[in-house]
Length: 245
Image 1 (cartoon, rainbow, N blue to C red):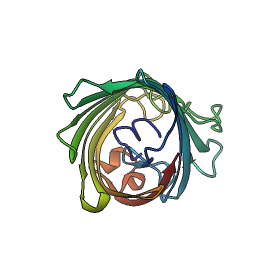
Image 2: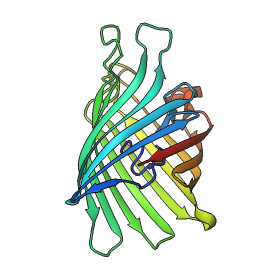
Image 3: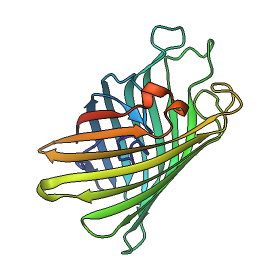
Image 4: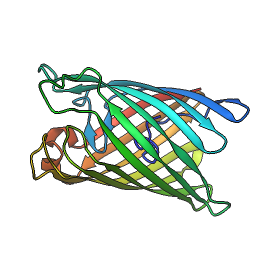
């Protein structure tokens, strides 16, 4: 499961069911998803087309973890600087603070676009450090706050800072409700020029697990559409089917 997309965002990024294979202190799991639109921080990564996604995760009982996640994407289709695959590699440490209801998770994530032609455009690959904090009020309601920092954001576009907050509520009949608001700020350099950009976005989704499958319907929108790409961050309703083992 993509961290941050997918950790706090829990996604969205991508409801993976908590079904893992445990071997002593080690836990291994895998996930796969089909979605009508891959949306990351309010921006469609597939020009509002469907995407196939999946990943593998390893966790140690100490709190250390590592993983890999990939998705089909659609960047600059029909040009010499296209990209059709995103691959994410991440690792970190997480846990709970006693019986306080507070959880934490921090680490690093590398976004790789292996088929991009760097000779004709700015390098898409970039690295982020992230910190996620959570608090469970009870078995029904929990909240989260996340921050991510990139010293050299997507497209060699300077420093990037992202912050998001979310609320998750367990509903009757096994349904879940999730609300998230986030803000992305990028200093600017090669891709968008010296002025950079910043925008805010929000999403609200309903999810349900049936057997070994997870179903998620999420509505996405952005407040500053001119600063996040116009139509690719317009209002979008996305349906995702996922499973994990």
